[in-house]
Amino acid sequence: MTVDHFMSVVFEETRSALLVGCVFVYKNAIIAKADNQVNVTKNATRHAEFVCIDQTCNAIKDNKKI
Image (tube, rainbow, N blue to C red; front, side):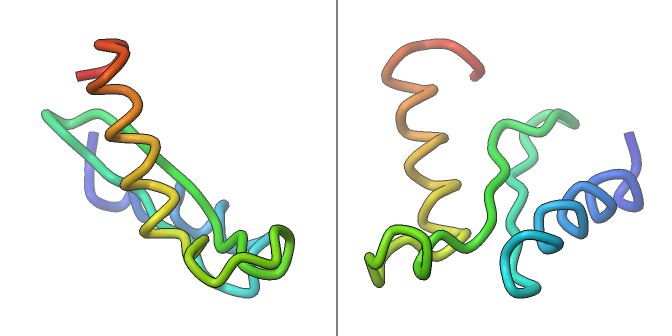
């Protein structure tokens, strides 16, 4: 996959998130993607990048994606 593909996924995430989206890529595969959840959850720590970090940590813990 190309950087353009990964960026298109980021832009998809931004459509629902006040123009904030995040994608983590490992070994040419998307392992986490998220949008900004601060307003939805009323939790200031739910920025897109933190949501992706949590998804990645959970995947490692559950040995699902990486």
